[in-house]
Length: 225
Image 1 (cartoon, one colour):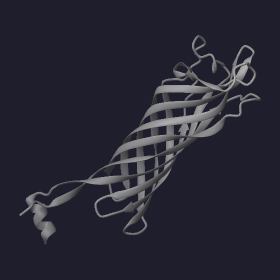
Image 2 (cartoon, helix red, strand yellow; image 1 turned 45 degrees about the vertical axis):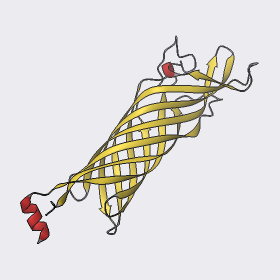
Image 3 (cartoon, one colour; image 1 turned 180 degrees about the vertical axis):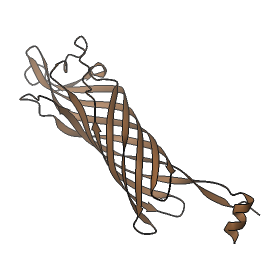
Image 4 (cartoon, rainbow, N blue to C red; image 1 turned 60 degrees about the vertical axis):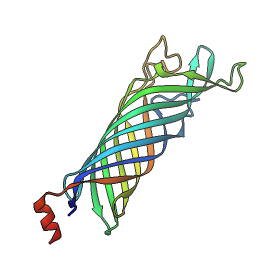
């Protein structure tokens, strides 16, 4: 007789989707248009179910976040930059789930996030120079390497026989100032009055799959009864 399978409290999953975000800048200047822009994110996670409602979920995400029309100035040169920032995100979420039907549940989540910046660049628009069009710059030194944040969100889940389909809508609120204030390398954002924080909305869709183990003999007998 084949051993019976018993579902554990662990599940593994992934989600992918888009981000919509922008910088929040203190003391914005006249030409600080600072518009939102769309990026992308891919998240891998492990979920541990504490009881029928609560679970904890560590995550690793790879994100590309964007913010457009940020003002820069060098002497008399002035224009805007469209920034793209790529990060590895380490998140720890607490989740409360409530079943609506046998096949559908709704969850609320909250947690903390630490994003590690590994690449960034800016697309410069310089309208008051002889340079026309756009050109790219490496902006790695313009931002701090760590961006800490808080996350809240909702998760509708559709439960299938051996897997669950999830959608996720999140808001990530950046907590620290990411302006590096490097006056030698940071030509565009070096302004002591200029605090820059991230604000992002994330929409993702994905799967999570429960982990099973072989039942012990006593558990197999009980499940067969």
